[in-house]
Image 1 (cartoon, rainbow, N blue to C red):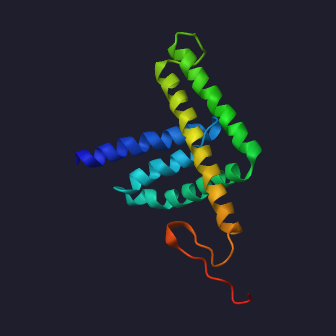
Image 2 (image 1 turned 30 degrees about the vertical axis):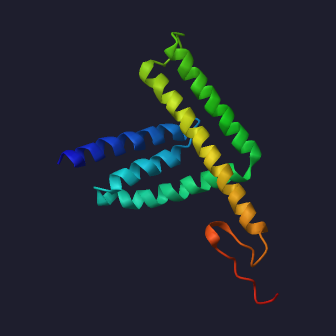
Image 3 (image 1 turned 60 degrees about the horizontal axis):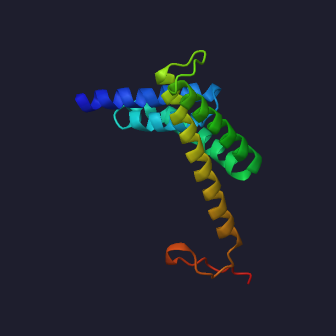
Length: 150
């Protein structure tokens, strides 16, 4: 009973934060997917929207991974979020920002940077795999099979 309540609160907060990030700079669908994944551990109704959120999150990650400009824009937005949060915590009076929202801004910015780093790293790994010749040794000792036309 307590575990279900904790899952409900944590999953709900993550999902709500992700929904807020859909209109704010940040990886909204990634956080929505994380929140729904937490909820899906205890609530079967969360599995269907989780599939949709995972697809949208993957699309967003791929877009950032494939475009250096999108990645740079996302990092810039993240730095602005972190800076606003730090300024608010340092005592600068910002409209609509209190200590809680300042912490959320900082965490959102850090989460966004982490998402961009992850996306760019995955893209580089994919490019390295695509450029590796057939039969070449890959990661973890795996070999790519040579095509039959060679």
